[in-house]
Amino acid sequence: MAKKLPIVAIVGRANVGKSSLFNAILDRREAIVAREAGTTRDSIAAKAEYQDQHFWLVDTAGIKDPEDDFEFTIQEQITQAADSADVIWVMVEADVPITTEDRRVAKMALKSKKPVFLIINKVDKAKHADLSGFDRLGIKPIIRTSTTQSTGIEQLLGSLIKIVPKATLQEDDDRLHIAILGRPNVGKSMLFNTLAKKQQAIVADRAGTTRDINRAVVRYEGREVELMDTAGIRRNGKIEVGIERFSVIRALSAIESADVCMLLMDVNELNVQLDQKIAGMVKDAGKGLILVVSKWDVAEDKDAFTRDALAPQIAHNYDFVPWAPLIFTSSVTGQNVTKIFDLAFDIDTERHKQIATRDLNKWLRLAIDAHPPAGLKGRSPKLNYMVQETDNPTPAFKIFGSQTKFVHWSYRRFLERRLRDAFGYTGTAIQIWFIEKHIAHKHGNSPTLPERK
Image (cartoon, rainbow, N blue to C red):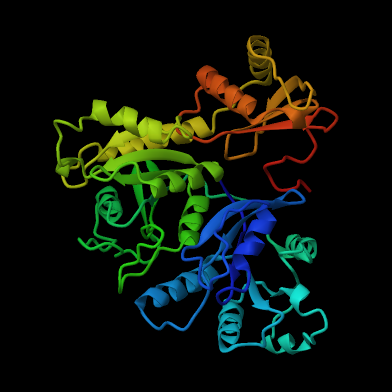
């Protein structure tokens, strides 16, 4: 069973305000915003929420004429976003007449057969302008916004949640889904082929060979396993001529479809910020995670870089996912490759572990006695009892009490660490929610699942 959140992609030509809208919805400066056109060079994705509806929001680079390979890769990225998204927001400027690029974006979006919104941004600059001409783009509904003045954003989100598909639980019998993630040329396709025991993916020495998600179904220990090999996620600004950049939306699709994700890291190039960003995406999606150091057979200095020396360094760099197991592999020699399946199976078992409510509340009392919640602004939260959700693919726990909104984020981290010490959950993200005790938990709505009918 896998939980899939809907994906909303913002597309449009450069400098129409896509990143500003992205930041306004998230209420934080996640994307780089500047006056120069074409600032955004990589899709940025983050989880967003409006009226208890969760979704992925993707900000893409501005569409332009593909004057060179650099620009062509951006267009490929936007095309992929349209292909993979559940909803597409096409953004134009109110104070600029319809351009050729606007028509190209609209045509591309409508061709996808996905729900499409037209967002006319910067209406504060065109208060008396006639905007009826934008009807010629053929997109409905039309939402008028000003990200600088926060105009129209509530209407946009309200219209979205009326048509966006709810986060769904996908039944897929007993098959385990594993996604292989990482930057280009770290050995993902080689590992995919080794695990699948057949040459399904293209293996080459140059980076960026994989253009789409390759899939293979194998059987291990009597159980079906679907492997997903994704295109490599490229560093910001590191665009190689003639090679397609990875669209982060592809990784999102794979992560959302997966139960367990493997993050491959090149043994000769560790401590890369982008690798850590990928791990954060997996954590945010509530999936299982395995940190895989690849190419161990070609480590430049095995005497200096032994497992015992590298493991603490990697643990420090990934201290935000201390529960993720670490394994060193070589697809060439086959070292530890089959152990990946064993690890993924163990993680899947942990993800399905259920703790009795009686044991959870006994644990909660001990945790509070050891370290009561301090709260904020002079308000002291009181935590009364907790339950585990029984129908969530991610281990999720609800703690009921009073003044729960004042629980500090560090206390959530303290409880998660204690919970893992007591009950395990190695290799998987977990979710802890604080809820006011007057909200029913047995027959009410879960904060992490679609509304019960």
